[in-house]
Length: 350
Image 1: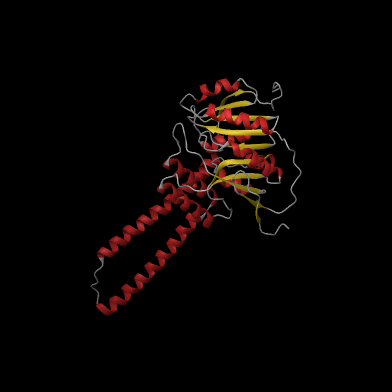
Image 2: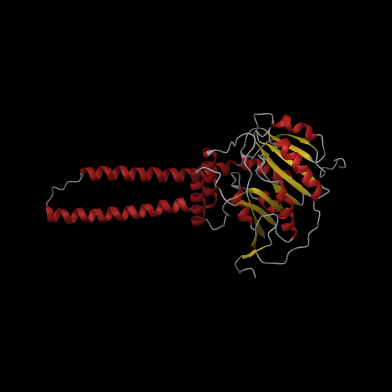
C-alpha cells in the first residue's frame, strides 16, 4: 500500500464548485459533525475589509460549530486596521495578534497557525476574495476524510498578462526542479486538520514558502475550484516585487534547478570552447598564422563573464537563504495579543 501512487478521483460537486480528491489511499477516519474551528486571517492595511469579512465569517461559523475562534494577524499595518478590529475584540472568539512590524504574509500565516487551537483550521485572506460561503463545503470534505482542502482558482483572467505568464513560468520551474507537486493556482484559502497544522508548525525553516510546505507535509488532500470575487475596497500590497521575492523563496527552498542549469550551461560552454580551440588549431595549419578573430574573442569573454556573474548570483541567493537559516532568528515577534478565544483557560462562555 505504501508504494502505490497517489489516488486521484472525482468527488461530488456541490455549490457550483468541482472537487478532486488527491492523496494517499487509506480508510477515512470518523470525524465529528461539529469540530472546534479556527480561522487564521493575515491582514496588512485591511481596515476597510475586515469589518465586512468578520460580519460574514462569524455568521457562517455560528452555523458550523458551537466552538470557534478567529485569529487575525495584524502584520504591521499602517492604516486603521487595529481600530477597525477593536469593536470585535470585545466579543469572545475574536483574537488579534499584533506583530511588532511587517514580517510578510508567510510569517503572518505562520504566526496565526502557531496560535490557532481548533481541531480544524481555515486560512483565508482579509480582502474578501476568499468567499466564506465555501467553508461548509470544505468542512464536509474534511468529514469525508480529507486532511487538507485547498481552493483553486478556475482561471486567472482578471490578472495582468505579465502576472499570468510569471505564474506559469514559476509552476513550470517548480515542476521540473522539485520532487513535490505544488498544485497550480492554489493559494492560501484552505482547510487543514490539526495533524496538518502541527506538522507545518513543527518544520524548522525560518524563511518559509507556505504553499511548498503544505505540499511537502503531504496528507490526504482535496481541491475545490472557485471563482474569486473582485476586490471591493483598497488595493493589494502584493505587487510584482513581492511576487518575485516569493517565487525566489519558493525556488530556492524546494528546487535545485537553478544550480543544475548553471552546471549544465557551464558544461555546454566548455564543449563550445573546446570545439573553438580545435577549430583554431586546424585553421592555423590550413590558413596560416594570421587569423582574424579579436572581435569574437572579446565578445566571448564578455559572454563568459556574464554567465559567471549570473551563476555567482544564483549561488549567492542560495547562500543568502542558508545564512538566514543559521542565524535562527524568530520568524515573527508578537507585540501584543488582544481579545479572547474559547480555547483560553479563562475564556467566557459564548
